[in-house]
Length: 435
Image 1 (cartoon, rainbow, N blue to C red):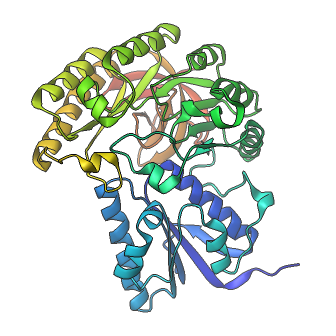
Image 2 (cartoon, helix red, strand yellow; image 1 turned 90 degrees about the horizontal axis):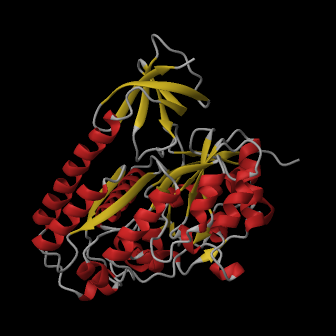
Image 3 (cartoon, helix red, strand yellow; image 1 turned 135 degrees about the vertical axis):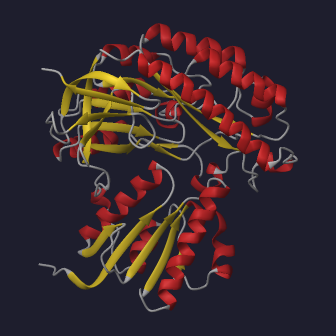
C-alpha cells in the first residue's frame, strides 16, 4: 500500500474561465490519486505552487502575470520551494515567459498535463478520465463537453491556446455526469468554447440534443444549464429538448458580441443582424419564458458611434435577461490584430459603461415583474443573515441571486426550495420560503 507523500503540499491557483477551473479540478484529481497533498487556493502553507493561467484578453493576461510575479517573489524569499505555470497564457507565451520570469521552475501548455504530473513525480492515470476534485460547492459542477474551437473570430485568441474543436463522446460525458451525481451534484453547467458545434467531428452532426436527452436521464441531476451557444447554425432541436425535459433549464447563454452587420462581418462572426433577430424570436417562441444571457464586445476596430448606437437600440428592444459587456483587446496572432485599433481606450470603457447602465435598467424592470411569483431555488451558501441561492434563470458567479432572510426562514444549502419573491433590486431577488 502506498504511503501518502508528507514532504510536499501543492497549492493550485486558477485564473480565468470555468473551462480553466475544470482543468484544475482534473489536475487535483490526478494529484490525489498519486497520493500528493494538494489543495485549491488554500491559505495553508504549501511548498509547491501551480498557477493555472488565462491569456484571453489584456486584463486577464495582466492578472495572470501579476499572480506569477507574486509567487516568484515568494519563491525568492524562500516562502515556497517550487513554482510551476500552466494554462492558456503559458501555452501562448511560453518562450517569452521563460525569458522574462526565469524564477518559474517550468512552464506547461494547456495539453501538457502528463508532463506537469511527471515533473511533480506523479503518473498520469488514464483510468481517472472524467473524475476530478470539485472546487465548486458539492451540489453543482461544470461539465466540459468539448475542447478547442474551429471558429476564426477575428478578436479571439482561444484557438491559438486551445487548438481546434474536439468533442468528447456522449458515453464519456454521461459517465462523468453519473460520477458527479453519485457524489451529490444536482446541477450541471455544460461548457465548451462552442457548445452548439458539439458532435460534428465525432458524429458528423450537431449532437447536442442527443447529449442533453442522455444527460437528462442521469439519476440525481435536476438542472442542466447551457453555456456558450454560438448563434450561427444554431441547432433548433435543442429548444425542443429544453421544452420537453424538465431537467434542461429554460436558460441559454448565447454570446452575440454585436449586432451591426459591418462589425459582425469584421469580427468574422458569419452571421447577420437579421438572422440574429429571427433566431431570438424563434427561441422565445419555442421556449416561452426562457432566460437569455449574452455578451457584447464594444470598441472593435472601426466601431463608430452609429454602430454603437445600433447596438444600444438592439439591446433596449430585445431586453436580454442577463448581459455582460467587455472591451476589445488587440490580440497578436488574431486577424483583428491586422486592423488599426482605432477606438480610444476611454471610449471603449465609456461604451461598456453605457451598455451596462442600460442593462441595469432592463434587469430592474424584469426583476420587478417577478414580485409575487414562486420560484424553485437552489441554495449555494449562507452569508451573514441570508441564505443565497439561484433560480432556474441564474448561473453561478455571473447572474442574479435570490436572498432569503435567515432570521425568519430556514433552507438547507445544497437543496432546492420554493421561494415566493417579495422584493427586488437591480440584479437580485428577495423572498421567503413558500410552503
